[in-house]
Length: 325
Image (cartoon, rainbow, N blue to C red; front, side, top):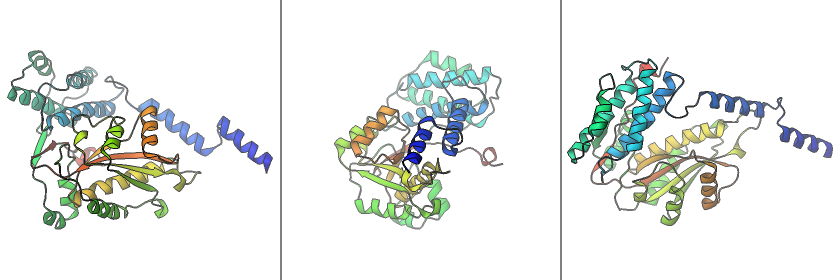
Protein backbone atom coordinates (compact mmCIF):
# COMPACT_ATOMS: atom_id res chain seq x y z
CA UNK A 1 0.00 0.00 0.00
CA UNK A 2 2.83 2.36 0.89
CA UNK A 3 4.56 1.64 -2.44
CA UNK A 4 1.31 2.24 -4.34
CA UNK A 5 0.82 5.62 -2.65
CA UNK A 6 4.38 6.65 -3.51
CA UNK A 7 3.81 5.71 -7.14
CA UNK A 8 0.52 7.67 -7.22
CA UNK A 9 2.17 10.77 -5.81
CA UNK A 10 5.03 10.48 -8.28
CA UNK A 11 2.59 10.13 -11.17
CA UNK A 12 0.69 13.21 -10.01
CA UNK A 13 3.91 15.19 -9.66
CA UNK A 14 5.23 14.56 -13.15
CA UNK A 15 1.81 14.52 -14.85
CA UNK A 16 2.22 11.28 -16.79
CA UNK A 17 0.86 11.53 -20.32
CA UNK A 18 -1.28 8.40 -19.87
CA UNK A 19 -3.26 10.11 -17.08
CA UNK A 20 -6.50 10.96 -18.97
CA UNK A 21 -7.31 14.05 -16.89
CA UNK A 22 -3.79 15.47 -17.21
CA UNK A 23 -3.85 14.90 -20.97
CA UNK A 24 -7.31 16.41 -21.30
CA UNK A 25 -6.22 19.44 -19.29
CA UNK A 26 -3.05 19.92 -21.35
CA UNK A 27 -4.97 19.50 -24.62
CA UNK A 28 -7.51 22.10 -23.56
CA UNK A 29 -4.84 24.57 -22.45
CA UNK A 30 -2.98 24.07 -25.73
CA UNK A 31 -6.18 24.68 -27.71
CA UNK A 32 -7.15 27.67 -25.55
CA UNK A 33 -3.75 29.30 -26.03
CA UNK A 34 -3.95 28.73 -29.77
CA UNK A 35 -7.46 30.03 -30.38
CA UNK A 36 -8.31 32.58 -27.67
CA UNK A 37 -7.96 36.22 -28.71
CA UNK A 38 -5.18 38.51 -27.53
CA UNK A 39 -5.54 42.24 -28.12
CA UNK A 40 -7.23 43.80 -31.14
CA UNK A 41 -5.36 42.05 -33.95
CA UNK A 42 -7.02 38.71 -34.63
CA UNK A 43 -6.25 35.51 -36.54
CA UNK A 44 -9.68 35.01 -38.11
CA UNK A 45 -13.17 36.47 -38.44
CA UNK A 46 -14.59 34.62 -35.43
CA UNK A 47 -12.01 36.19 -33.14
CA UNK A 48 -12.79 39.61 -34.60
CA UNK A 49 -16.48 39.03 -33.95
CA UNK A 50 -15.77 38.36 -30.27
CA UNK A 51 -13.34 41.26 -29.83
CA UNK A 52 -15.50 43.83 -31.62
CA UNK A 53 -18.61 42.69 -29.72
CA UNK A 54 -16.68 42.85 -26.45
CA UNK A 55 -15.67 46.47 -27.02
CA UNK A 56 -18.98 47.76 -28.36
CA UNK A 57 -20.82 46.21 -25.42
CA UNK A 58 -18.63 48.14 -22.96
CA UNK A 59 -19.80 51.30 -24.73
CA UNK A 60 -23.43 50.20 -24.55
CA UNK A 61 -23.08 49.75 -20.79
CA UNK A 62 -21.80 53.30 -20.40
CA UNK A 63 -24.64 54.66 -22.52
CA UNK A 64 -27.14 53.05 -20.14
CA UNK A 65 -25.90 54.77 -16.97
CA UNK A 66 -28.40 57.11 -15.34
CA UNK A 67 -25.59 59.48 -14.34
CA UNK A 68 -24.22 59.70 -17.85
CA UNK A 69 -20.65 60.98 -18.33
CA UNK A 70 -20.40 62.53 -21.79
CA UNK A 71 -17.23 61.56 -23.59
CA UNK A 72 -16.64 58.49 -21.37
CA UNK A 73 -14.67 55.41 -22.39
CA UNK A 74 -12.04 56.93 -24.66
CA UNK A 75 -9.71 53.92 -24.26
CA UNK A 76 -12.50 51.47 -25.07
CA UNK A 77 -13.64 53.55 -28.02
CA UNK A 78 -10.06 53.56 -29.33
CA UNK A 79 -9.82 49.78 -28.87
CA UNK A 80 -13.12 49.26 -30.68
CA UNK A 81 -12.02 51.42 -33.60
CA UNK A 82 -8.64 49.70 -33.80
CA UNK A 83 -10.25 46.25 -33.90
CA UNK A 84 -12.72 47.36 -36.59
CA UNK A 85 -9.95 48.92 -38.68
CA UNK A 86 -7.88 45.73 -38.38
CA UNK A 87 -10.93 43.67 -39.34
CA UNK A 88 -11.41 45.66 -42.54
CA UNK A 89 -7.69 45.71 -43.34
CA UNK A 90 -7.69 41.90 -43.16
CA UNK A 91 -10.32 41.80 -45.88
CA UNK A 92 -13.46 40.85 -43.95
CA UNK A 93 -16.98 41.98 -44.87
CA UNK A 94 -18.47 45.25 -43.64
CA UNK A 95 -21.90 43.62 -44.00
CA UNK A 96 -21.46 41.27 -41.01
CA UNK A 97 -24.14 41.60 -38.32
CA UNK A 98 -21.72 42.29 -35.46
CA UNK A 99 -19.76 44.86 -37.48
CA UNK A 100 -22.92 46.76 -38.46
CA UNK A 101 -24.05 46.63 -34.81
CA UNK A 102 -20.72 48.11 -33.75
CA UNK A 103 -21.28 50.98 -36.20
CA UNK A 104 -24.73 51.44 -34.66
CA UNK A 105 -23.23 51.71 -31.17
CA UNK A 106 -20.67 54.25 -32.36
CA UNK A 107 -23.47 56.30 -33.91
CA UNK A 108 -25.42 56.19 -30.63
CA UNK A 109 -22.32 57.24 -28.71
CA UNK A 110 -21.67 60.27 -30.91
CA UNK A 111 -25.33 61.34 -30.91
CA UNK A 112 -25.73 61.07 -27.15
CA UNK A 113 -22.53 63.02 -26.47
CA UNK A 114 -23.83 65.80 -28.72
CA UNK A 115 -27.01 65.93 -26.63
CA UNK A 116 -24.73 66.70 -23.67
CA UNK A 117 -22.81 69.34 -25.62
CA UNK A 118 -19.72 67.21 -26.22
CA UNK A 119 -18.34 66.83 -29.76
CA UNK A 120 -15.14 65.16 -30.96
CA UNK A 121 -14.33 66.01 -34.57
CA UNK A 122 -11.27 63.75 -34.65
CA UNK A 123 -13.32 60.78 -33.44
CA UNK A 124 -16.11 61.45 -35.91
CA UNK A 125 -13.61 61.69 -38.77
CA UNK A 126 -12.10 58.33 -37.80
CA UNK A 127 -15.55 56.72 -37.63
CA UNK A 128 -16.50 58.16 -41.02
CA UNK A 129 -13.56 56.35 -42.61
CA UNK A 130 -15.05 52.98 -41.65
CA UNK A 131 -16.93 51.41 -44.55
CA UNK A 132 -20.38 49.91 -44.18
CA UNK A 133 -23.72 51.04 -42.81
CA UNK A 134 -24.98 50.74 -39.23
CA UNK A 135 -28.01 48.64 -38.40
CA UNK A 136 -30.52 49.57 -35.68
CA UNK A 137 -29.43 46.96 -33.15
CA UNK A 138 -26.83 48.80 -31.05
CA UNK A 139 -27.13 51.18 -28.11
CA UNK A 140 -29.62 51.18 -25.25
CA UNK A 141 -33.32 50.65 -24.60
CA UNK A 142 -35.81 51.95 -22.05
CA UNK A 143 -38.33 49.61 -20.49
CA UNK A 144 -40.90 49.40 -17.72
CA UNK A 145 -40.38 46.64 -15.12
CA UNK A 146 -43.15 44.06 -15.03
CA UNK A 147 -45.46 43.83 -12.03
CA UNK A 148 -45.68 40.71 -9.87
CA UNK A 149 -49.00 39.90 -11.52
CA UNK A 150 -47.56 40.28 -15.03
CA UNK A 151 -44.57 38.10 -14.16
CA UNK A 152 -46.86 35.45 -12.69
CA UNK A 153 -48.90 35.29 -15.89
CA UNK A 154 -45.92 35.05 -18.25
CA UNK A 155 -45.12 32.02 -20.36
CA UNK A 156 -41.52 30.90 -20.82
CA UNK A 157 -40.98 32.85 -24.05
CA UNK A 158 -42.19 36.10 -22.48
CA UNK A 159 -40.00 35.55 -19.41
CA UNK A 160 -36.85 35.01 -21.49
CA UNK A 161 -37.48 37.87 -23.91
CA UNK A 162 -38.27 40.47 -21.21
CA UNK A 163 -35.40 39.76 -18.78
CA UNK A 164 -32.67 42.40 -18.92
CA UNK A 165 -29.45 43.08 -17.04
CA UNK A 166 -29.90 46.10 -14.76
CA UNK A 167 -27.14 48.51 -13.72
CA UNK A 168 -29.17 50.98 -11.70
CA UNK A 169 -31.21 50.11 -8.61
CA UNK A 170 -33.58 51.68 -6.10
CA UNK A 171 -32.65 52.15 -2.42
CA UNK A 172 -35.27 49.65 -1.26
CA UNK A 173 -33.76 46.43 0.19
CA UNK A 174 -34.46 43.13 -1.54
CA UNK A 175 -36.77 40.82 0.40
CA UNK A 176 -34.73 37.80 1.53
CA UNK A 177 -37.76 35.52 1.14
CA UNK A 178 -37.88 36.34 -2.57
CA UNK A 179 -34.24 35.33 -2.94
CA UNK A 180 -34.98 32.03 -1.20
CA UNK A 181 -37.90 31.38 -3.54
CA UNK A 182 -35.69 32.07 -6.54
CA UNK A 183 -32.95 29.74 -5.26
CA UNK A 184 -35.52 27.02 -4.63
CA UNK A 185 -36.80 27.37 -8.19
CA UNK A 186 -33.28 27.36 -9.66
CA UNK A 187 -32.59 24.09 -7.84
CA UNK A 188 -34.58 22.36 -10.58
CA UNK A 189 -31.70 22.96 -13.02
CA UNK A 190 -30.52 19.65 -14.53
CA UNK A 191 -27.12 18.46 -13.36
CA UNK A 192 -24.84 15.47 -13.89
CA UNK A 193 -26.61 12.51 -12.21
CA UNK A 194 -28.67 15.05 -10.24
CA UNK A 195 -25.65 15.82 -8.02
CA UNK A 196 -26.51 19.55 -7.79
CA UNK A 197 -22.92 20.50 -7.04
CA UNK A 198 -23.54 24.25 -6.85
CA UNK A 199 -23.73 26.73 -3.98
CA UNK A 200 -25.38 30.16 -3.78
CA UNK A 201 -23.61 32.62 -1.48
CA UNK A 202 -25.63 35.76 -0.73
CA UNK A 203 -23.56 38.63 0.65
CA UNK A 204 -25.48 41.32 2.55
CA UNK A 205 -22.66 43.13 4.38
CA UNK A 206 -21.92 46.33 2.41
CA UNK A 207 -18.28 46.37 3.50
CA UNK A 208 -17.75 42.84 2.19
CA UNK A 209 -19.60 43.65 -1.00
CA UNK A 210 -17.24 46.57 -1.56
CA UNK A 211 -14.20 44.37 -0.96
CA UNK A 212 -15.47 41.72 -3.36
CA UNK A 213 -16.27 44.22 -6.10
CA UNK A 214 -12.73 45.59 -5.95
CA UNK A 215 -11.67 42.14 -7.14
CA UNK A 216 -14.22 41.91 -9.96
CA UNK A 217 -13.50 43.48 -13.33
CA UNK A 218 -16.85 44.73 -14.63
CA UNK A 219 -18.86 46.71 -12.05
CA UNK A 220 -17.36 50.19 -12.26
CA UNK A 221 -19.96 52.94 -12.19
CA UNK A 222 -22.86 50.89 -10.81
CA UNK A 223 -21.63 48.25 -8.34
CA UNK A 224 -22.02 50.67 -5.45
CA UNK A 225 -25.80 50.50 -5.94
CA UNK A 226 -26.14 46.75 -5.28
CA UNK A 227 -28.30 45.87 -2.31
CA UNK A 228 -26.78 42.40 -2.17
CA UNK A 229 -24.19 40.42 -4.09
CA UNK A 230 -24.51 36.75 -5.01
CA UNK A 231 -21.65 34.40 -5.83
CA UNK A 232 -22.45 31.06 -7.48
CA UNK A 233 -19.81 28.36 -6.99
CA UNK A 234 -19.52 24.69 -7.94
CA UNK A 235 -17.86 22.02 -5.81
CA UNK A 236 -15.24 19.80 -7.43
CA UNK A 237 -15.97 17.07 -4.88
CA UNK A 238 -19.18 16.39 -6.80
CA UNK A 239 -17.45 15.33 -10.03
CA UNK A 240 -15.81 12.21 -11.44
CA UNK A 241 -12.01 12.39 -11.54
CA UNK A 242 -11.85 10.11 -14.56
CA UNK A 243 -13.52 12.36 -17.13
CA UNK A 244 -15.56 15.28 -15.71
CA UNK A 245 -12.80 17.88 -15.85
CA UNK A 246 -15.10 20.70 -17.01
CA UNK A 247 -18.43 19.50 -15.60
CA UNK A 248 -18.35 21.84 -12.60
CA UNK A 249 -18.44 24.83 -14.96
CA UNK A 250 -21.14 23.27 -17.14
CA UNK A 251 -23.47 22.45 -14.25
CA UNK A 252 -22.61 25.67 -12.44
CA UNK A 253 -23.21 27.78 -15.53
CA UNK A 254 -26.58 26.15 -16.18
CA UNK A 255 -27.58 26.78 -12.57
CA UNK A 256 -26.45 30.42 -12.73
CA UNK A 257 -28.68 31.06 -15.77
CA UNK A 258 -31.62 29.40 -14.04
CA UNK A 259 -31.00 31.59 -11.01
CA UNK A 260 -30.99 34.76 -13.13
CA UNK A 261 -34.36 33.80 -14.62
CA UNK A 262 -35.77 32.83 -11.23
CA UNK A 263 -34.65 36.10 -9.63
CA UNK A 264 -36.34 37.99 -12.46
CA UNK A 265 -39.50 35.94 -11.94
CA UNK A 266 -39.38 37.05 -8.28
CA UNK A 267 -39.21 40.68 -9.44
CA UNK A 268 -35.56 41.14 -8.43
CA UNK A 269 -33.33 43.24 -10.70
CA UNK A 270 -30.04 41.52 -11.57
CA UNK A 271 -26.81 41.94 -13.48
CA UNK A 272 -24.52 38.94 -14.09
CA UNK A 273 -20.82 39.64 -13.49
CA UNK A 274 -17.86 37.58 -14.63
CA UNK A 275 -15.99 35.48 -12.08
CA UNK A 276 -13.05 34.95 -14.44
CA UNK A 277 -10.49 36.62 -12.19
CA UNK A 278 -6.75 37.04 -11.96
CA UNK A 279 -4.98 34.77 -9.49
CA UNK A 280 -4.60 37.52 -6.86
CA UNK A 281 -8.25 38.58 -7.24
CA UNK A 282 -9.52 35.03 -6.79
CA UNK A 283 -7.32 34.56 -3.74
CA UNK A 284 -8.80 37.69 -2.19
CA UNK A 285 -12.37 36.55 -2.92
CA UNK A 286 -11.66 33.15 -1.40
CA UNK A 287 -10.27 34.73 1.74
CA UNK A 288 -13.14 37.21 2.12
CA UNK A 289 -15.81 34.49 1.81
CA UNK A 290 -13.82 31.62 3.37
CA UNK A 291 -14.45 29.40 0.36
CA UNK A 292 -13.50 25.74 0.41
CA UNK A 293 -10.54 24.84 -1.81
CA UNK A 294 -12.86 22.53 -3.77
CA UNK A 295 -15.16 25.38 -4.81
CA UNK A 296 -14.67 26.98 -8.22
CA UNK A 297 -16.11 30.41 -9.02
CA UNK A 298 -18.92 30.46 -11.60
CA UNK A 299 -20.58 33.89 -11.56
CA UNK A 300 -21.28 36.97 -9.45
CA UNK A 301 -24.77 38.45 -9.61
CA UNK A 302 -25.48 41.98 -8.41
CA UNK A 303 -29.05 42.38 -7.21
CA UNK A 304 -31.43 45.10 -6.06
CA UNK A 305 -34.92 46.38 -6.60
CA UNK A 306 -35.89 48.10 -9.83
CA UNK A 307 -35.60 51.91 -10.04
CA UNK A 308 -38.40 54.12 -11.31
CA UNK A 309 -36.53 54.73 -14.56
CA UNK A 310 -35.00 51.74 -16.36
CA UNK A 311 -32.48 51.84 -19.18
CA UNK A 312 -30.17 49.06 -20.23
CA UNK A 313 -28.01 47.83 -23.07
CA UNK A 314 -29.84 46.61 -26.14
CA UNK A 315 -27.50 43.58 -26.29
CA UNK A 316 -29.07 42.37 -29.51
CA UNK A 317 -28.81 38.62 -30.10
CA UNK A 318 -27.42 37.21 -33.33
CA UNK A 319 -29.86 36.01 -35.97
CA UNK A 320 -30.49 32.31 -35.41
CA UNK A 321 -29.16 31.37 -38.85
CA UNK A 322 -25.72 32.50 -37.66
CA UNK A 323 -25.73 30.16 -34.65
CA UNK A 324 -27.68 27.06 -35.72
CA UNK A 325 -26.34 24.55 -38.22
